Image (cartoon, rainbow, N blue to C red; front, side, top):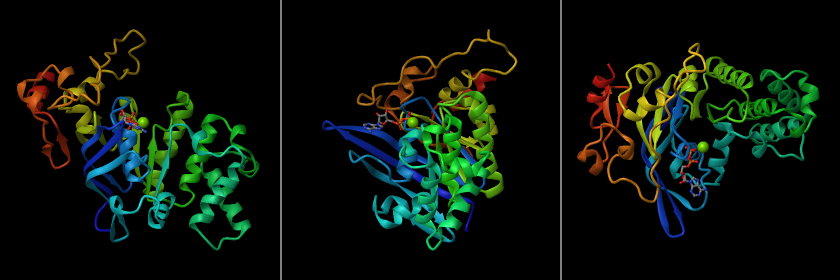
Length: 337
Ligand SMILES: Nc1ncnc2c1ncn2[C@@H]1O[C@H](COP(=O)(O)OP(=O)(O)O)[C@@H](O)[C@H]1O
Ligand SMILES: [Mg+2]
């Protein structure tokens, strides 16, 4: 490996074409996913988090297109331009699962109800590791369930998805995703459907993968609390752009984008009790077909000026690892102190 960057996304533009209208869903998104680190992508619903994740795996619907930008995957010492691979070609299929795995919010959509969980894990295993006999594959699937903290794994292996609880299903999904030891795990709001205790267990599991297997992790969430717990690096997304990006300690304590600051005000503080006032982000996200000309956050921002209305702020680097898309970031941070 040349460096620790496993996936490198630069200036990614993805447009959706519906009813002869063009929705510019991603408008120049850049970030890295690094070995043994967790990148959290955070932002309100509809800002483009899932589209970003699905673009990396070329799982976009027909009506959408990568207009511009690049997605590089570093495999051993080789660089693969994912965006140039055929969507359903052999190389792309091999990459999914073997190199980059993804888990979704609702594991039921990804699990097939008519096959046992073990059968589905073995299908993955057979696809990526040929020449295993049945017994070896069985042992491997049971082992992967056990590693995910599922008790009585041999029995569980023979059960169907509906016999699993929500938390168990998500563990089974992670078992499936991890059974081929991928270099990258993309988790798209993996615990949104689960209660707090089970969510905490799933997050512990993801942390274990990071520390023990040095898996590069991209974790999507709409919750700043999850970011504070899980992230090494953070990308804050708003309306198809990353508005702030950096190490978690910098973004949480030195946030320079008004949107990041607004999200931070919406985290409940432990111990402050139920009476604390959590401020939702003021205003609504604009209609994607009727976007502001300049900064997308402009209509909701206390710092906005005429410049912001007319020009999209570029990525401004505060230091090597921290950038912000805001013309007034100096003022924002002064104001906060
Ligand atoms: N299948 C689709 N058809 C049309 N538009 C879509 C589709 N999926 C996503 N979009 C558009 O892309 C935007 C971003 O969606 P998404 O990435 O799913 O948001 P989120 O940040 O909640 O994951 C949506 O607001 C919508 O305008
Ligand atoms: Mg989503």
